[in-house]
Structures are given as C-alpha cells and as structure tokens.
Amino acid sequence: MKAGDTKRLANREPKMDVQLLNYYEAIERASADMLTAARAGNWDEVVKLEGACVLLISQLKNAAQELPREACGADPQLFDAARAKSRIMQRILVNDAEIRHLAEPWLQDLEDTLTGRRKTLH
Image 1 (cartoon, rainbow, N blue to C red):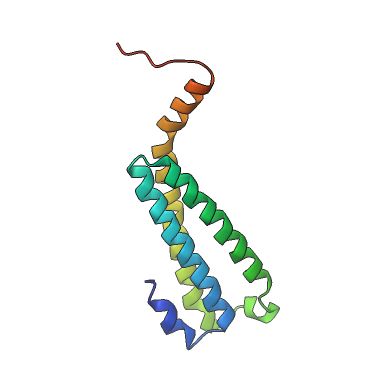
Image 2: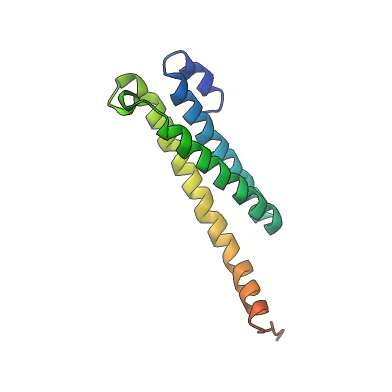
C-alpha cells in the first residue's frame, strides 16, 4: 500500500484505524530513512531516527489501546487495512535486518575501542 492509499481507505474504515495506518506508514518511512543513513555510515542519524521510531511505536500502542473492542473483531471492511499493515510491517522488518547487518562492523569497532583493543593494519 502506498502512502496515498490511506486517504482511499478513510472513506471505508473507522477514523481510528486510518490513524493507526498513518502510524505504521510513519514508522516505515523512519525505518527506510534509518536504512539510508546506515548505508551511508551515518550512525548518529541512525540513532536519532531510532529514537523517532521508538516514539512513533509508543504512540501507535497508545492509539491501538484506545480502539473500541468491536473495531478489533473480524470486520471484513478492515481486511484491506490489516493486509496493508502486514505489508508495511514486513518492509520494516526487512529494513531492520539490513540495518543490523550494516551495524555489526560498526558495533564491533565500538566494542574494540571501548575495551582498549586496537585495530592493527597488516
């Protein structure tokens, strides 16, 4: 689902569900930005964006808790939104896995520096 699809769903779904979908999309954008920063080796930006993700996830959890119980049922109108959320979460997880892979050498260098081990050039 593309970001513009949220507006299309707004006419068919409860307002709160569209709000939740907006949070998922914002988290996905932050995740993609984190991946871009990680690929560029800009770890300060990755950390900054990670903080933004944590805040967005917290807001998402709070908004989800405010959902009426009946909105959490098996309402067929919510099926498209559930599928969209699933696709977004899959993309976020793929981004996260690649960020972790890119961060491994950086984290090892940091650990080596903190423990006093130095890199040797041979």
